[in-house]
Image 1 (cartoon, helix red, strand yellow):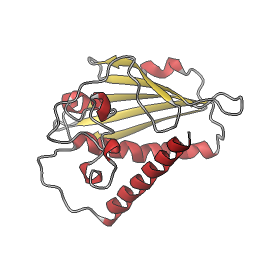
Image 2 (cartoon, helix red, strand yellow; image 1 turned 90 degrees about the vertical axis):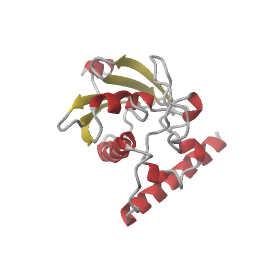
Image 3 (cartoon, helix red, strand yellow; image 1 turned 90 degrees about the horizontal axis):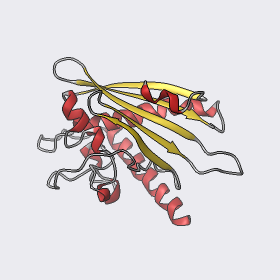
Image 4 (cartoon, rainbow, N blue to C red; image 1 turned 180 degrees about the vertical axis):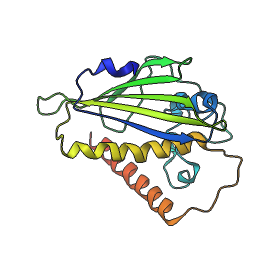
Length: 203
């Protein structure tokens, strides 16, 4: 992919591919398209999570409300938070024709060692029956514990599944009652958000 040259010799690299029940143009730049992902306070569409999370998440972690004005799109140079205090994610490539976007993220250094750096490239490609595939490639360098780091692809797959559902969300459609698994997932998201807030408060 075009972003591979940014980190030429990664410690870890993997691809994640998930179907999205939206045509490519909507998955790319629709109201909840991936190029609108980012802080609602910055005029974007939020973290692109399924709407079942909205009742349990604090306001700053929710996706854009259905009655809010249309969000803007990401631009080259925009910062995208990844949840790590002090981390900086920057949009370094955005190509509408190829429907590909690259975000380059740097974590702060620790104990005089360089912090984790990773690129996250997102592609939207046509699939079947007017649907899309969301393809993500992650390349990491300066991974502190490479053996433990092998859990990253699994965590990323779960996060990407939520993002795919967020891209698919239709706030006008009736919502099915949440399953126990989805309730537990929503609770885990709340706890993770509370822990991040506490860490930010300490810093």
